[in-house]
Length: 148
Image (cartoon, rainbow, N blue to C red):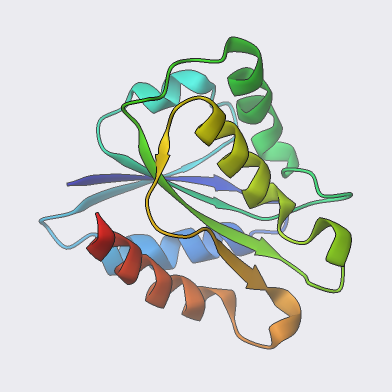
């Protein structure tokens, strides 16, 4: 199985989580490639394998700056993603209740609109919980992979 982890990050926390997930999942049977969303467009979803969106939330519930181009390209080109299976590991802070984890939610909503099928529940890490996101990422990604 091939897993493509697409990372949207501002401060590097989502990238750290993605690296931890890659180390946990890439075991010979499962091949994992982690890609920062910088310079990606909707054609990335033509790749073989399943996709894992690992993204933080920025500003007023926006996707991170490095994810904006991909998000906007998907919204503009509206490709048929009916063959795509994906998961979402979102990072946020519940103290921003009105926009908590909206980076992950926006990708999840758009991918669903375009026909992609989410596997499992969207994970919503809360920075104010005191639990390190990379610890949660390790546990969550193993459960997610089992669902595939």
